[in-house]
Image (tube, rainbow, N blue to C red; front, top):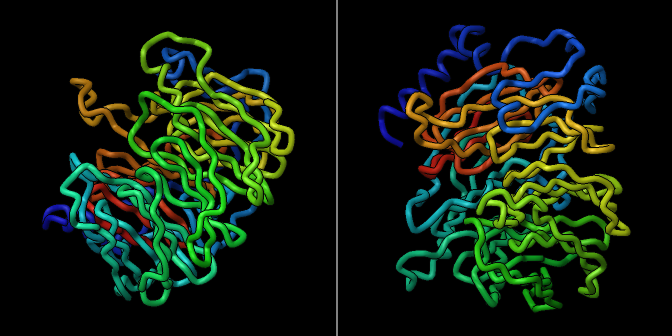
Length: 444
């Protein structure tokens, strides 16, 4: 991190400590009054065609109580990608930061969300170096370089997950590793048939990965042997990055870049149902990109999924029946809490969608351009994450925003030293940001 960026963040942290209310309130906001009834639609939302449903404008949003989690074992928090409502300490301030390794650039991208197991935080940089930190102090326990070093450029992707004393690593150079959680030593490695863009999902002694060419592999967690594979439809074009599968019981829900979402029996590898999330409205070339880059969420009896091309759905987990769909496109994981789903759209809007039927309770527009006057530097937003009655998103322009989950009102802003690479992580009342410059920032 450059001295100017470090000083900027330090000043922000001191603002939390010294002012007690000024900068802290700018970020965290004041305690909210009960939300007033009525639809909230910004002008930009109307221009984009996405509108709140006036028939549910009086419905009060009730969230589950925040809980203090001690883990974040996967991209999306857990194997089902459902973390509900997390707790976060009052007025979080920066406690430490560190350089995790290689930053995102033209040839490599950071695509691995940090994970946390009790007191240890793990990261992976754009060149597949894994680091283990004390999540409270920032002390480095170990680091493991998995870069093959015979690849000059162009390989990136993968991610990390934890289960049963091991860190499982998928890589953009078509290899999967199991590392000892205490030492970082390699326990086993296994070749994949193609590069891997997303993190693995691990559950029940099995490791599941999706390759760039839309194959799903099941590997034994103990020794890496291949158990079964599934081949999805091929896609001529796709977005950078990918989504990890979600799992609950014996159902593995797999998102492919073709727009297919498939349920597979985790034991036998048999396909149980299959739906396609391609948009029915072909209004511009971008709608042909049906890539499901947002991780699907399994919440109770249903799957919530969204494609880039403008299709968001709720699916019966057991039968594969489409319960509802709506014309919303996005590349970020929907966040489910209680009877509402919070989703970030391709048009930089956040919508509160009713879980029951897909109706929109409220919409809030986020800034679309870092230079709004000249409409330059499109902002890529990461999130949202729900913690202590705040929705948190972070942008590629180096700013995080907190919003009310009840009304969509913007509550505060936080300056980051650089653009966000991944959605923030919340564990043990602490908040972690990972930037594109490979900086991990802990706020406690």
